[in-house]
Image 1 (spheres, helix red, strand yellow):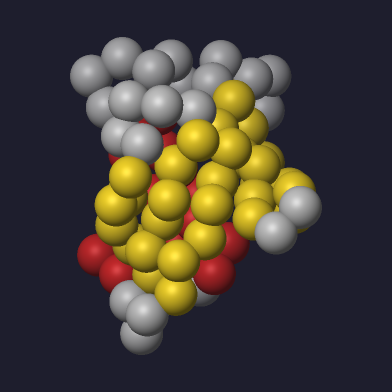
Image 2: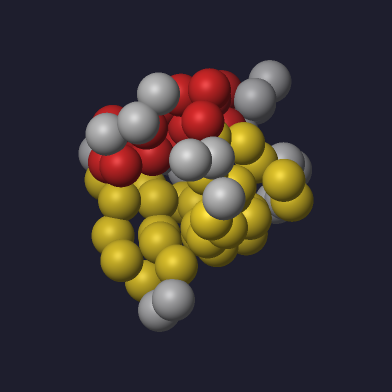
Length: 73
């Protein structure tokens, strides 16, 4: 099990993941409404790491720009 920190920027012009310090920065086109940005983040991380979406969980910061993500092996 691995934990990473992710800084989320919503309403960006395009979806992308960028290495940022010891974690990642995720630019997401979705707004932070009704969990849309969190869902998009999980989908992007699954593609980035080439793992299934159910292996990724937001453990801290569901309503914050700074999130802690747990990736199951």
